Length: 345
Image (cartoon, rainbow, N blue to C red; front, side, top):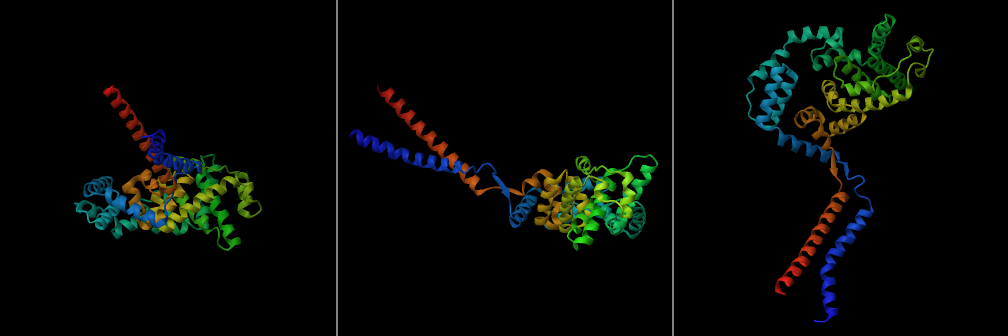
């Protein structure tokens, strides 16, 4: 066999590796790994969440979670796990949980709790009571004015002012004025601000989110604003207020996809605008089942489910793996042949 034939055979053997390496180089030149993960579509996300919840929520997992809810006296959480067990057909021991739920749902317990809840949202024993008894008032401009009244009295008495509560009330009033001026385009900001303010009163906001909602308020200018003789920018930092408004809009999307009580519960998973945006996407896909998804998967796994590896990134990684594999095989073959010749010498 001539040298030309040997060279041709060697070139043919190296051709698959060269072709794969060239394709890999071209794919890498498009920078596909700069953003390897992309958002799932709503349909993809709904299917992914359903599959993951079914995989995690075994009968043993549900029984443990249900027993924990009963031990804590959390009737709403117990009801959620009972419903999930029914949907998945999981056999569990239900009697203590059903007793807890029935006791919490009794008319006497509802009436007693509702009176205290209407007087002060901070005294609401559950988010269901809050939604039934206090939401209509708290989501109205009257609720915002009442929050500012509380803040003004505390400031006048030299007491500590809840600046988060007051700032959200200012956002709600500002959005109300914008709704009237724009014909409704700021309604979602108004509703979301009210939701955040109720969560603050109930202690459901995470410390990280509460810090981001803390707005500076110029108390001396507040009476003029309420009378209509001062502008909102005279009272607070409107740029920061706009950022909080965007977060409020995301939480209103969560509320529409689930319910007011569930959105209040879900707020404890939100530490900032990015979390609010991911929760809104998740709620769009999961709808009323969003609380179940968060309870079973937890925040990290549920939010990761909103993303998937892009097809371009997946193809690039596959080509990199194939190139490395072919190169390893080629080197191993050459090394084996060299070792064999030395053994024969």
